[in-house]
Amino acid sequence: MSAMAMTTSLRATRSLRTGPVACGLRRFSDYIEIARKMKDTPYNPAVEGEVKCPDYVGWDAAVDADFHKLQTGPWKKGGRPYEQICDSALDLVGFTPMVRMSRLAKHLEVDCEILGKCEFFNAGGSVKDRIGKRMIEEAEKSGRIKKGDILIEPTSGNTGIGLCMAAAIKGYRMIICLPMKMSGEKVNTMKTLGAEIIRTPTEAAWNALDSHIYLSARLAKELNGHVLDQYKNAGNPLAHYEGTAEEIIEQTGGKLDYMVMSAGTGGTVTGCALKLKEKIPGIKIVAVDPYGSILAAPDSMNDKSVRTGAGVGTQYQVEGIGYDFIPTVIDKRAIDYWVKTDDDESFAMGRNLTAPTTMFQNMQTS
Image 1 (tube, rainbow, N blue to C red):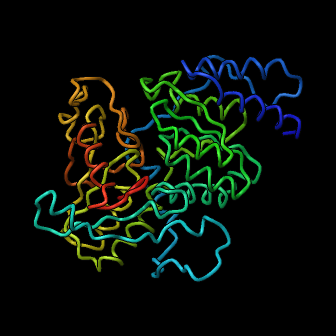
Image 2 (cartoon, rainbow, N blue to C red):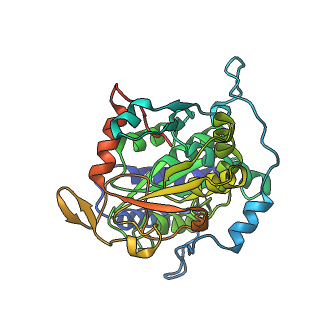
């Protein structure tokens, strides 16, 4: 791609992030119309019906093969070396501390020790920094991407931040497609990291023409870009199988009875669960899924409506967990129990965790 074409592409794409958003598809079409009028265009016009939304079928043979092929070997023990000068913020991903949440246990009136893993200590503020770093590094190793390429990702926000941070450090252009309900703080963080932002309707089904997933696929074709695709990329669960879970085992000495974790793509809970079950016999894995999502098993748990104190609706407002499809990176066989939750419960616990009497959780605690 020529320098002029790249500049043209970025100028046109940058215009997508301004102004009111009514429909992601309409704004994307505006971009395509601009690009078509330019002589030196970077896009390859797609024939109607040519762009297909990716298929997601839950854990399958392909992701299972990649999961085993891409493993990097034995865990290297040790904490984060704060005393040394790191080469980049990517060196500050992982090795997050754990905290004993005694006041929370007392508040819930449970006779057990509750430990929280403080993923907000990652450089980008969440557990998703781990997969942003891992997916880009795996794509570089395989020769799929090179410095200067355009990366595009559908996300609920935190994965976007992790990818934007890694992309900015490594020299990639980043375009993020995300639903309107995601917080302005996440959007502003990604813009600060140099990303172009496309907002899509919250109510759009995952495979609809105006969904963040479909628009990412179309942008990748039009701009000759790459969707690393957290929903089916084996680097997602691997980052936790080889990193997060090993840290938990080292920090606790393997003395755990349960791991409780919310599920979005399912990569975090899957990767952690597979490793913990290998190393800690008898441990039980509990996954949390919001009403309105269909991730929980059995399917009878997945009420299509949403329970909230304000009544029954069709959307949940809590960010980053739950989906209306089953991502390929989730292996439900690794999960022993599912619990459904609603917005009221989620937001109440979030406020409780940020109270001075418990623990400041910032963006994310696992």
